[in-house]
Length: 336
Ligand code: FA5
Image 1: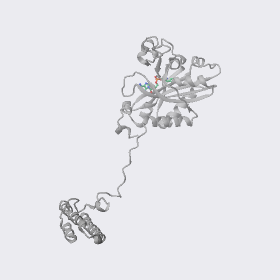
Image 2 (image 1 turned 60 degrees about the vertical axis):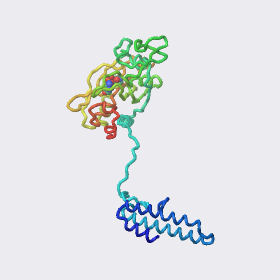
Image 3 (image 1 turned 45 degrees about the vertical axis):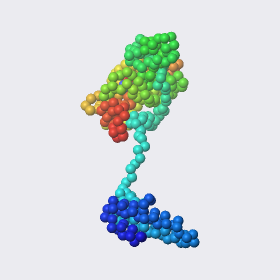
Image 4 (image 1 turned 60 degrees about the horizontal axis):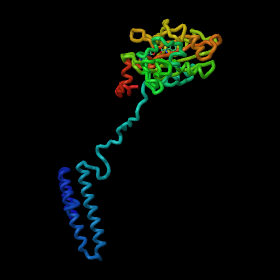
């Protein structure tokens, strides 16, 4: 029977024929091996041990003959080797996620400013009008406080008397901060000069999205307060920063501007794709702001700036549409 099985396996010309032969001899239900096994019951108890051993040897031999034939036909799994497996091919790197380009930019900017002695500070994203406006010298009737230009929140506190927060836009309501300048106030309220901090984080404005605007974006605030600080110091810090982050050949310019919390004020542009693009505002701290935090404007002076993190990241990486950064499209994001 062993020779017969072996010959049948050898004769199999393809995998189907081999499978037929396997069922015939090794099949669990009707295979020839099963028949022999069934006959074991009728064997004399004294001869059973010997017969059992011979049955096992027979089983192994038939199985080995089958394995040989299977290998010959290319189905080599019998000895644990998959013929389609090539151990010399490079492996597939597991996907472990990715740091968002804006987070990478924040780390990079923090590092550059850290080298100039600016330490990172943080403030809340949900703010009160005192820190977002009042202490920054933005009076009640200033257009920057317009409910249509801010995300006021309908919190329990602001709705206590039944009014809608959006219609009030006044003390007692809360809003998503519209600028990181809030952190200037929080830091100065809690510390005495000299101060040299940056603060990077999200800000929110109901701006219609376009290639350079998004309703949620990031700013890097800078604040330096000491004695005898000048506009020349401010311009130097911003130039050194721009050269570090955007390269030695970047062209930047300062334009006169207005912010209620700085005097004089400037806006800062870089040249990109044949045009000047605004990337931040800056200026010398207005004495009214020093008074609001309890500093003596006769004793201290300082500068502040607020830069758009997305615009900086976009220029460095040649991203021409801010919306790509927030599309969630991994084909775009995984390039960074
Ligand atoms: C401010 O927010 C001032 N707080 C900046 C400042 C700080 C001035 C300290 C003086 C002293 P402004 O609204 O211009 O300024 O915004 C600053 C920068 O944020 C802009 O130059 C731009 O780069 C970026 N920015 C503004 N709006 C958007 C938006 N919707 N999407 C993306 N970036 C924006």
